[in-house]
Image 1 (cartoon, rainbow, N blue to C red):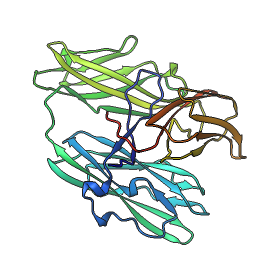
Image 2 (image 1 turned 180 degrees about the horizontal axis):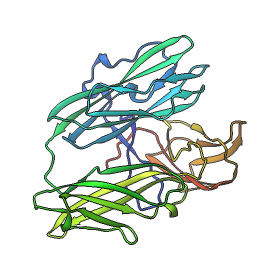
Image 3 (image 1 turned 135 degrees about the vertical axis):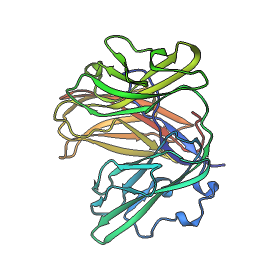
Length: 342
């Protein structure tokens, strides 16, 4: 069975590492999504996965993140309205609302099924171009399952966004007890000094964490796992992940990770870095992925090329020496023919 849908999910990696991961899910047609998922004809954009995906079994109340890639395949710029969802179980956000020809962006879909059994939700994305406008329904389905009883902290993912001059982050978490009764004072976190946590004296289920190491992170995307355990029940553990991107003061949006889907052949992509001068480049981790520097007049760019199809998946770290310091990009390439389990 050919598995060709590509998703970007957060990968839990050590502190200060760049994040980007791929997972392949069953095609929408096999998930029973039907002809109602056909996109409007004549669009000047292309949408990965045909704008519809089945996310499989998801515990009720937990969240799954999926990224649809939107590409401008026309000869003129296109613009988008912010996507609007039809359900509180779905959040949607587009990365860039104006695309020049041949440029791409992603729509981040965060789906949390709110009932057991099959569910469907959609985000309406309106695209505008000189010839008119059209609504693109981006749809996700899932099969909600019973939430397993275990220790957990919510939110499980804390998105710190773009980090520039700030050195610390402070955020509150809600403790959800599993089979072993727990309260905040029973927890032990595995991060070191000077990071700390404090229990809410008025609510034993709330804890406030302070992370002080943001100023030491290198430029680029990061994922920092923070684990907690219940001292009274050694098998009860929970994990929270801090995600975001480290940028210097005044920097504009940069890519932190990128995926090339070869589909059996050579593929390429250019990533733009406005306002940044790139002075050097190094690629490690794969001999099939090449990177080069070009100046387009809009700021320096990096051209990524996959030399032929990957057998399964190739991962490379592209390290850039720039006028504002080192920037790292994680590049993942796959032929899309196999499934990678979590």
